[in-house]
Each structure stands twice: as structure tokens, then as C-alpha cells.
Length: 252
Ligand SMILES: *Cc1c(COP(=O)(O)O)cnc(C)c1O
Image (cartoon, rainbow, N blue to C red):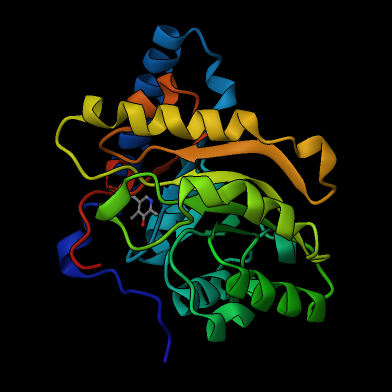
């Protein structure tokens, strides 16, 4: 059975292309404002539209608004959406990114359908993805996920373990690490998570990627709908936005 959510009556209004276009315009204004505050160029910031739980119409509306990157957190939902709207891997017009926790038995879906894997957080997953990417004769770009919020989260490497893990990644011929990703603690007040973003930027800047042929520190994926301005001020290059682009999710 297809894992693509249907356009339920509840979200009809949200998937309206004009509504999506307005939300994207608002987000772009907020990005520009945060960049002005931080003395950065808005061109340095990539938006990942988190389309999990949303139907294909939402993705079409996102593309029509100029978005390129789409994020999913369930492997079979990504597979089915990629079949419906091919990613760059299959010469399509979008970039599909997997941003959630992955079980090793689903690595095959990622190797076949995801353009990027943004949640690499264990040697076990690295090994499974490397093997599957080899079978598909490709190199999978990845971000390493860091647990920056401590007890609040189950997933991601501890910050003190990140550099050792990056060194180990040199052994995986079919993975190419391109940066780091983290989720800050959930909070109503984004100022509270500024120190977490700052810590991530230090980790990102401190690794000697020049010594590792399979690691580049190009992307720092930090910030979601509630905290992306603070993330941009602290050096994020990639923000992951769901509800601020597609409207509220009615299930997870
Ligand atoms: C769902 C999700 C997001 C987007 O969340 P919003 O609050 O809707 O912006 C970002 N990153 C990850 C890893 C997610 O799972």
C-alpha cells in the first residue's frame, strides 16, 4: 500500500499553492532579516521543506514556490514520494533528504531513493548504508547528527564522540559526509537554545576535514520553524521548516 498521505479535507486549505507561496515569502523575509542581523548573505541559507505527513500536492506547491529540498522522516513514505516525484538521483526536479531516525533494515530505501541522508548517527547505520549504496553503485551524501540537547533526545552522537566517528567515516567508500545536523531542545523561547547552536558551530568549525578524504564540512543543518532565526545568527547553513511552510501537521 502506498505510504503517501492523502489530501484530507482538513488540509485542503493548507495545500493551496497561494497559501504555500505566501508562507514561503514570509519565511524568506524572516531569513533576510536574520541575515541582516548576523551580517550574513541570505544566499548562504538553504531551506529544507519538511514534507513529512503532507501529500504530493504540498510538494508541488513547494516546488511552485521555488523550493528544491524536501525532508522526510519515514523511509517508505520517502520511497513512495520519490517514485511519484523523482529526485535528482533519478534526474528529477527535487532533492529528497531523509531527516529522521533510520532502522538498518530500511537502509535499502534510502540508498535507492534519497538524495541525501541527514541523520547519520552510528557505525551500524553507516555500515548498512555504505553496503546498500555500494549495491546501487552510488555515493550517498550524509550529515552526521549530533545530540546537542542532552537528555531531551534519543538520537544523535554525543558531541564528544563526533570527531572519532568522523574519522571512522573515512572507511566508508560509498558515503560522503558533508556536514553536521542537530535538533535543539524544544522551547517556546528560542534564545534558550542559542548556546546549543553555538556549541554546534564550534564542533563544525573545529574538525580538520582536510585530513579526511570522505568528510567535508560544507553544511550545518540547524533550526526549525520555532528557532531558525537564532540558528541563522549562530551559523546555520540549512534550516528545516515544516509547519511554517506547509501549515500544521495533523499527525506525525
Ligand atoms: C519535523 C521535523 C522538522 C520540522 O519541524 P517544524 O517544527 O514543523 O518546522 C525539522 N527537523 C526534523 C528532524 C524534523 O523531524
